[in-house]
Length: 328
Image 1 (cartoon, helix red, strand yellow):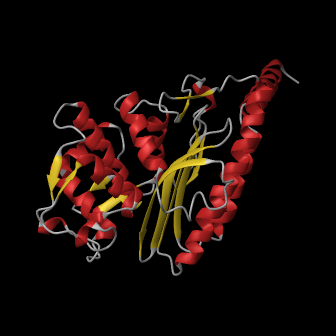
Image 2 (tube, helix red, strand yellow):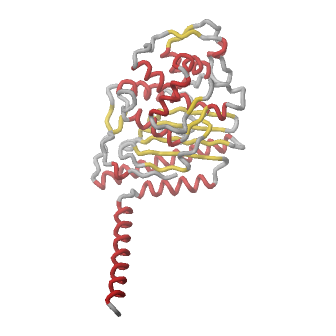
Image 3 (tube, rainbow, N blue to C red):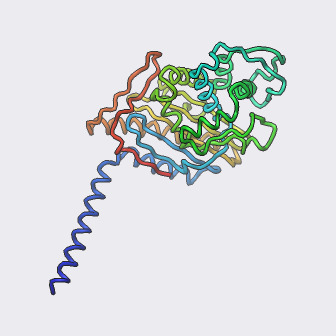
């Protein structure tokens, strides 16, 4: 064997060894619980009753998994989370306070969800009351009143400034029009990015984030993400539905294992099948999050979850970012 051939063989062997070591190092830093969660997600998605997309982020490490997480989906009432964010941003900017009265106009009314559609035009409600009705009972009329107050384009600009490229509000909420499916859009990735910042008190400021979490925690429709979780687990979330669409996005404060989750489904032939899918994803995410907490403890990773001054759990964001990975 001549010297040139020996050098070629040695170089190839070195390259193979280097690749093998790199793969071994990569797999060592990929937590088994999240590998299992990704497997669960793909298995469930293959049997999904329609088009599905989802994202899950462990708040302590930033580690994420998902399925088609960047897909633009009908947001339905989950678009009310971005509306709430812009309301608090304008409060922070000093444009108005939460006690500001807003007068109901006839054009604000939408009968798809809520109770304010039956109120008399000219009735006034505070911004605070409208926020609670918009999120906790998903009142569309309250939402339209807030959109009129803050400006629809301001919501879109705020989401764009936050790097959310799939989230936009093209119109008020008009559930009697088919266009509601295209007028209100977002993606699971966008929603998880937004919710994780709120959970970590990074969005606007600590006070605003805590207020938003408190409102989300008072959600009255709990038949999706929270349905199969233990009753002691706090879930701050927002649902959304149309005739063929079911969504739920939120923050789950599991013991030592808080995470943000967004599950969006559309083109459903059967809403019950959509409910089952979201519940199964939620239960799997919870079980794997608990396992991930044990993995972090065994790995010696500091992932302390503290509580805010309002007794709302907040995950510590200062954990090494090399654990993060994206997966559509």
